[in-house]
Amino acid sequence: MTIVLIQFRGIPVSLIVLGIVALAVFILTKHTAFGRYLYTIGGNKEAAVISGIPVKKVTCMAYMILGGLVALTGFMQAAYQG
Image (cartoon, rainbow, N blue to C red; front, side, top):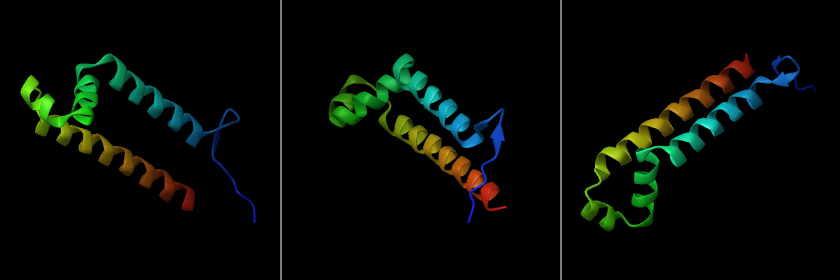
């Protein structure tokens, strides 16, 4: 049994996608208000509500982003299966 990975200039495409997603998540969480809101909600939801953060909107957006990442991994898995 051999594993054949799709490569771009000698680098597996899945590794490239992982790098892009990791960079995007890093930028999103460290350099945007949305990232600060996520950390605040994760730390103390009640304090976030009192601070005026739209908790439901931010939580919904976080789940939407997660759904997009799950769809991306599903597409990649289907592509590797052929």
